Image (cartoon, rainbow over all chains, first blue to last red; front, side, top):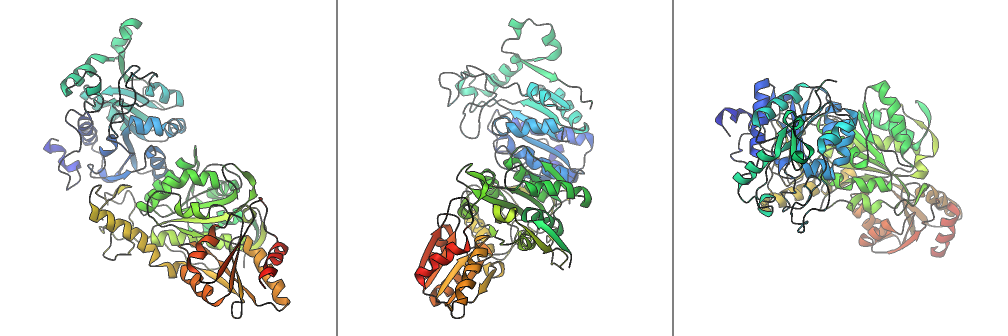
Length: 255
Length: 369
């Protein structure tokens, strides 16, 4: 972390627990920079997370109220805190396995209720902390600890899921698009209603090494190749779009 | 005296409001739904936050979130929903979050008989989550006590920073009685001490003060093993031992202050009926019938089931010849009593979805008189 973000870090925190090449540190920095640029008061913020690597982004690192909940249950806990004290600005930061696999029911219902929450889903397409098992965002054919013959199932498109459920603001960016991602986080923090950002974050340790992306650099490059903006996607054929991930804002954030 | 004619479930809702409960999240389940229905109406009048969540897990987790935001918060359910809540009850115990969970027990296991009575969740209430933890479990026998004990449940939860289970039964939930809701009651509010460690005290069995989100305390709340300020210590044996000890001892070492019971005709009793919940109504009726015949019989009514009244059981077991324990389960409390009583313990069980009638208890008791 750059020293200029130090005021947002909890005293006593000296380093992150993330593996070399993990994208979560970039995401962590971008969230804090977004907060800094908006001039938000950390005393009015509550960060809620579930279980997994991404759940450690706010807890214990952020110097604000943090609630590290059960696996999959960040959104309901955040809902309770927000409803009882609407002055709290509540951000949920957790992983794809946490928010969309075990917590998927809460995700769609919170979007349906359009609760005023900003949900950042750090999506690395694998269960990182538990050793690299398949999850609901793992692409078809990908190799994991529990799909050694390749994942036979389709992944969730979380943005489409959350839009269908009624979310106000929905976007997807990769940590390889830091400026757009930071702008998106700022927009979500300024938008009332349910805001959801899926953030693609590389996991070389658990995903890359089983999918011929052995080094962090290779994973970052692969992510950059895969991600195409919405605008660019419009000019590509369905064949060209196969295996691509479309990034950008999918709803404009207007209630 | 403010007299009201209420069902047990309605009385629980009123007791919660009287105790200061202003956050409720729940999911419909028979036979507890009337609690949620009444709260949903009454919170409009008293200014509480009510939400019907997508399941029982979401309900209890949002109750935990609201509690940390400063609310006195509650949820209510029945057996199957109570099972879904168990992981979060362990989380509330670990994070020392005051919450109240009402379980209106119905006949199980599983879906069982949703509209029929049982008291099969005594062990689930204590042992349902993982690891070594304590909860307080209280058990009313009347509509008045459902009201009073709900207030007591909130007081205990706030005082000891622990999940409290109001373990009642379908027969109490749907029973209608005239009760007094105008009594002066003591209300305990959360202790706050800005800057103090929210997860540690100097005392081995102490209860730390509890700040809320938004007060500038920069709280670090986690269900992982943590030090007194909430920092995760997931491989430190000393912190683990210290935390688990305190979480248990703050309840166990204060059990004399927590445990409540009622004693009837114990002075000369050779046979003592140990009873709780709805069954205690039939038990007392039976005991009084037999005393009219001159039988030396008494009764101990347990109002607190956990922490288990071990000392009380040992004491009464030393003086009586037989302890007779009628239950609407397969002997869950009788088994516990056997651990502490030196005399004979007779377990009478009925799991047919019906209440135990006084005549049945009288008939059984005659074998030991």
